[in-house]
Length: 100
Image (cartoon, rainbow, N blue to C red):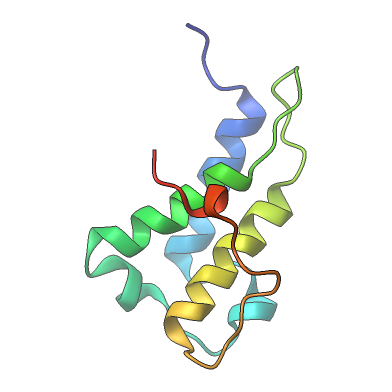
């Protein structure tokens, strides 16, 4: 069994860094300190990584094609947890939020 490409591992590492640092998608989450809501219990954080991983696309060479899109969709879910008035557009599809 092969390993994830360096590009995929770098994308995951940076996503985790931005998430923990409170700087994931600064435009969408400006003014929301989402970390207490995500880090208090495992399930919200698990959902964030599930969305990121489900949306992330990789080509046949293992190169990441849409890191920004994957981060944005995860950020939309985070925003919806912190701001009940926020409406996710387009709405999440079942495959995006599926836990594996």
